[in-house]
Length: 478
Image (cartoon, rainbow, N blue to C red):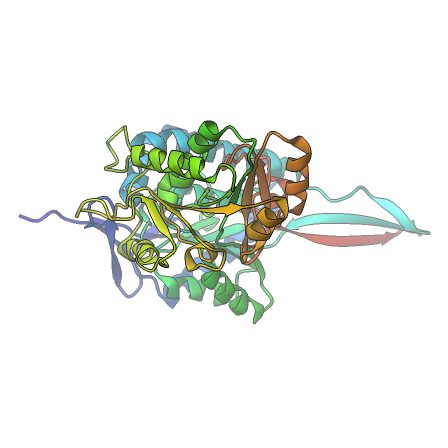
C-alpha cells in the first residue's frame, strides 16, 4: 500500500499549472526525512509565462490608487489570519518547525507586516512641488519599478515571502516569486489565498531549483531582482543582473557577534542568548551564534551556556517542549556536522556536537569554546544550532573580533554601562545593533546588512522605498 504524494503546482496568471515539460522535484519533510509531495521543476517556458503575466498585469496595478492597493493588502492579511491553521500545517511540513512556535512567532508578525505595508501604500509620495529655478516648478514622483523577480529562502519560507511580496505589491509592482526547492508548500498555499484577492498576473509563484532562479534573474522582463540567501547566491545574482543593469536587493548571510561585558547579568544574558542562538535550529542570519565574552567572566559564562544548551530540547513538531525542530535538509545537516568534525585541536565542545536520532535532520544544541579568530567556524556561517564562545581582554579587542568577519548583518552588546553601549553601537560595523537583547524585529524598523551580508533593506519605510524609483518632473510656468 502506497500513499499518494501531494502535487504542488506553479501559480501563473491566476491559475495553477504544472511545469511545462512535466518535470518535478521530490519535497522532503525534514522532521521525518520522507518525501511527502512533488513540486514543479520549472524551466524557461514557465519563467517566460510568469514574466509575461506579471508584465501584462503591471500597468493596471501600477495605476491603481494607493487606497485600492491598501485594501487588497488588508484583505490578504485578514485571509492569512483566517487560514492560519492551514498555513501553519504547510510550514511545519515544509520545515519541521514546532507547531506552537510557528503559530505564535510567525503568523502574528507576518500579518502585522502585511498590514504595515498596506499603510505604507498610502505614503507613496515624492517631495512637495517647488521652484528651484525661476519660472520652473519641480515635482518628484515616486513610482513602482515594474516586475520584481523574487527568490525566498528555506529558513523562514512564509515570513520571507511576506517580506518580499508585501512591499513590492504595496508600491504598485507585480511579482514573480520563487520559493526554495526544499520548502515550496507554504508559498503555493499563499498563492491560493492571494490569488482570490489580487487581479490575475499581479502575484505569481514559480517553483524550481537554482537554475529556475537563475532564469528568473537573467530574464529581460524584471526591473528588479530580490533574493534572500547565501553570499554565493547573492554574488551570482548581482553578476547576472549587472548584464542588463537590473536593480538588485540582497539579504545574505550573517555572523552576528554577541559582545558580553563583565558587568552583564550572566544568568539573564545566557537565557536570552541561548534562545536567540538555538531558535529555529540557528537557521537565522541574525542568530546569536558568535559570542565574545570578557575574560573575567568567560569560564562562568561558558559553564552556564553549556548547561542551558543541555536543557534545550529539539524534536518533532507536535512536541510542545521543544525549542526547535530539524535542520532543513540533508545537505544542511552535513554542513553543520562538518564544521564540528573539522574543529581544530584547541577547540572544546562544551555541549552537544552530534546528530540527534536517526530519523529526520535533528542536531543537538551545541556550544564550542577555546576558539581563535581565524578559525573556520568563527569566520564562516554555520547556520545551525551551534554557539561559539571567544574571550576578549578589553573593548578594543572586542571590537576587533566582532568586526573581523566578512559579514555585517546584525550584532548585540550586553552591558549596564550606557556610554560603553553607545560607543560599541557606533563602532560595530553591522546593519543592526541590539543592546541587552538579541533578535527582536518590528515592521517599522529596517533589517539589512553591510559588506557581504548584502544591501537594501527589508521591512520599514526604507524597505518600501527600495521597491520604488524616483522621477523628476519639471514644468514651465510661462
